[in-house]
Image (cartoon, rainbow, N blue to C red):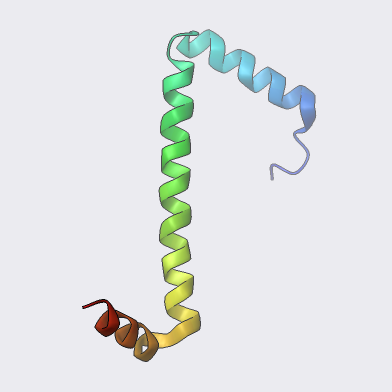
Length: 66
């Protein structure tokens, strides 16, 4: 779906965002988007770790931490 946006498409999207939100709000929106993406990545990393290691190994790891 988004494979063929290209550089010109990204520039148009950024210009529209600049017009709609203004230059003062764009850094706040970028920071919020980055924080959301970071949280999503850490959550999915935890889910993948559970699937690859299995519940028994995770319980052993939890016991070592206590």
